[in-house]
Image (cartoon, rainbow, N blue to C red; front, top):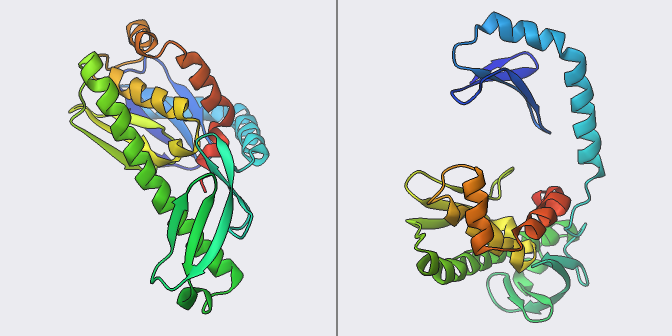
Length: 242
């Protein structure tokens, strides 16, 4: 991938013509493998006005996205989890590190020795970090449970499943059937998490997003359109994280 002033050039064997992709963090010219670079630059100059308008539109969308996370992790803050919000309770303990528990609400057990040395902002950050770690562990458990349920049923067995922090993807399936899932899915309704895992499992059989792929997804997840709709509507907020 080549970097140029204001945009990047990416060559693609699947690209039949030049197209421009504008996202929140970059402008990309996706070009066929053999297209001369001067033609790409000429096209980008001609389309400069369109690119600027698209960047403004994307930025307006980004500015309008509301985070699901609380402004501060303090007593009574609302924590997103599995499509709902739960109050945060904070208790002081004599333990050595912050521990998170969940049962009808979130509880952060904060060591007194930590609390007395931190201001409110620093304590909020420590609780946030502990919650993110807890959420990642829960995402791993949920992914394993769904894989145990669906992989034998459909004979779509991944080599591994990893939970990762990803800025723009919900999941992926590598060429060796290694599945990566975004830990933020644990904040979405369970049915959405379930759909994304099924989606990636189906890539073991269908390596594209063809009609055959979506038919396979529909067979294993009949209401997948509803879950995709949720991600389209709330995905940008979800991507802002905790």
